[in-house]
Image (cartoon, rainbow, N blue to C red):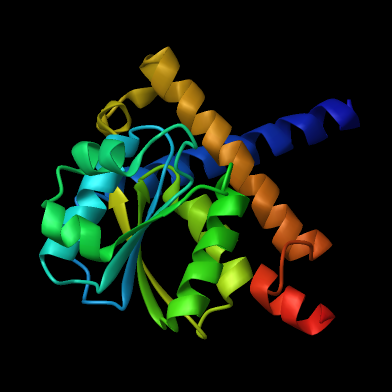
Length: 209
């Protein structure tokens, strides 16, 4: 009986956490325009077109000096990304960088850290999906170590998650549950195990040499 009671308590805590996470995601958009930063980073993934377009729009508003599109598919060309982002060619050719090495959120964080370090940027606007933003910020902070680099989240809304009863949609419910579970895993890694990168790859390479 004690094990059943313990399981029920854990289930209630997990469910309460999920609902709080969902509320946080839903209330994060629409986001006000962020203050200008040195750079703007778009993390690719689901609804990448909207993320890239949003980042380039911020660049067009002079809210950053350059844009990094992190985690670009290796089969995509610069022209493909320009078309997706609907960018003015002059601005795109001048001020948009593409990162092809990241395959996941951890890779996004490392790619972003290397880019920011190379350009000596101290402030970054982070553009990704609303549901992905909490986990992305954890990974970025693990590498960039705020306040050394200040991060300004600018989440892109996911229409299916804005519904008041999102749990009635199997796709929306699955997305929220999976992302919440990943978020908890990163929290556990950072808070309990103390794992995760503490230096950027560039810094590690310099130390090794």
